[in-house]
Image 1: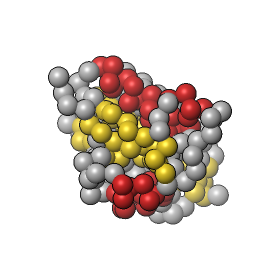
Image 2 (image 1 turned 90 degrees about the vertical axis):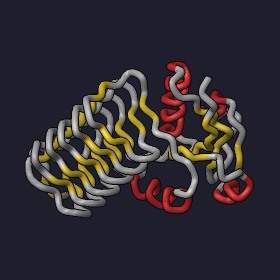
Image 3 (image 1 turned 90 degrees about the horizontal axis):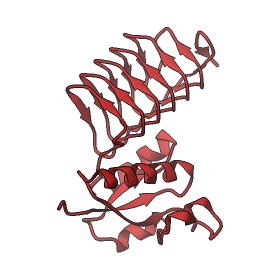
Length: 214
């Protein structure tokens, strides 16, 4: 039997709970065993909070890492790409397992960076690269020859076409689409439902159909 991989979950909100659901599915599949030893968050989840249903101990805030052995890894249950990047910079000497929900579709030659998460019903085709702690949410599609940088968030139902390059810390909103052969620069935001038909410069927020700077 595979030895369990001990990790602490960073975050206690809705995104963190969805990451825990992926952990449950991965453990049920049996190819990888993730043992979540507790939650690290700025505040302890209250007894009536949704996180209480998972029965995980509260380990404390950032200071908790000083009490945890180096063998304990981390899962970033945080939606914000910028916050995930900051936390990763502080914790990257620790293990960061890759989570792939069993109900995903992957083609050949898919490179998943440390800490990346594929949520249920994601489709990633072939020759795709995901950077560190990049999260692709449920029902999203990532096409061939696409590169997603570090700490990217692909929202639910987003469609990233073939040969797209997405920079670090980009947020692609729920239901948006990015046409093939385009680039989205670092720290850009693509709004929910937007249709990207031209390159998006770094740091720019685009919305609408077709997507334009806001």
